[in-house]
Image 1 (tube, helix red, strand yellow):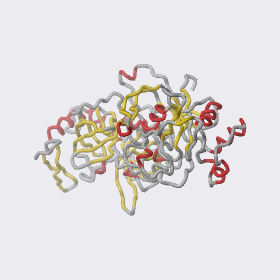
Image 2 (tube, helix red, strand yellow; image 1 turned 45 degrees about the vertical axis):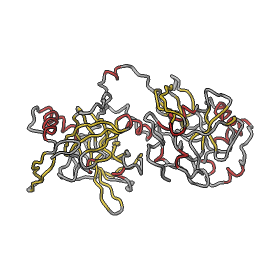
Image 3 (cartoon, helix red, strand yellow; image 1 turned 180 degrees about the vertical axis):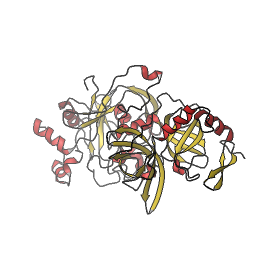
Image 4 (cartoon, one colour; image 1 turned 60 degrees about the horizontal axis):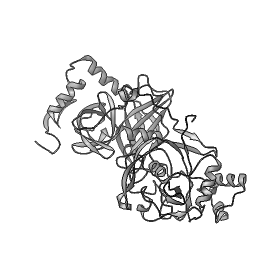
Length: 471
């Protein structure tokens, strides 16, 4: 029996006293099974490796709308009394405290807290934290740092498919290619595998986020690392992270992921490297640009911070200041109606500067050319502040953070940026809270040029500062 991905061969799988017919690509099953020790073990070491990998895989149970969902997750970091678990966002969506079962204590379910999730994204990821007295023998899985997708790589998935109902089932598969930020793999994985690891040579190369009839999608490791960084989960101190690649032997400058500016505002690192700048749809053909590392304010500059600046400098107040400070929770809302010159002077006072529009766009889009900070799916009210009457407190849409953990880069207040090639003018980016067209908050969109002395409704700003070796 043929399909467009692989040849299926039916053979019986024993499950208790019953016999279930399951379709696999028998040739590939045999090849992968022999390589990872699934069949009558060619080496004891291969079987032992599988057992060790299972110690890093967990079963996740969540309740939503009166229904029970079962999925998979895997441990990426272990601390003294905490385990950080990655899974697919749809596995835990609707349940703020899903249950986690570890290998060796199958019947005991630990409550987990959702630390970060990309809700509303059918292929999104989430990270959970399990706190307390953790079982002995669990481990954080290692991630590959040198996996290159060429197609044909033999992988395996460990998880909890509904059929066969075997806990910590090992399923072989083959990478068939890449689609954007996702790797595509074929195999007999099922819905219960969602959130589980895709493993190659014993290392994680992807997170299963969607499983279809005969193939699945997995988020690649670079994207996973960026998401974890944005959610405040560091992998640097995890002893299980693989560092065997020759590329990793080159000594790299260790950068702090987060720092605090002189104004007290948290700032997130945007690492050096290339990214895709511009979009043909907006008259700017995309091109790859190299940028040095820099830090960007995690949130838009708030009314409270601007008030402190004004008191220290006796700087002129923005238009309609009295209306801004009268609103509920006004202090934590972004300051707006500021001119580009006012914004630049605030940043300079604290040893910062306004971002260039290239820096702003990289902070919003990451390195994969996405349309919005959270990905390519259209915005919802959970992802961004848009189609509203006014701006909201900063950070009120945590599901819409950028790959670098920066909030409100789509919607809420639009933001001043500078133009390196034309220093007499500025450009606002990010759309604003009052727009009704979701395309108006897409990350590649740029407004027309304006003078630094201009201002607009719901136009605010955030600052950046260059990375230095002292940070």
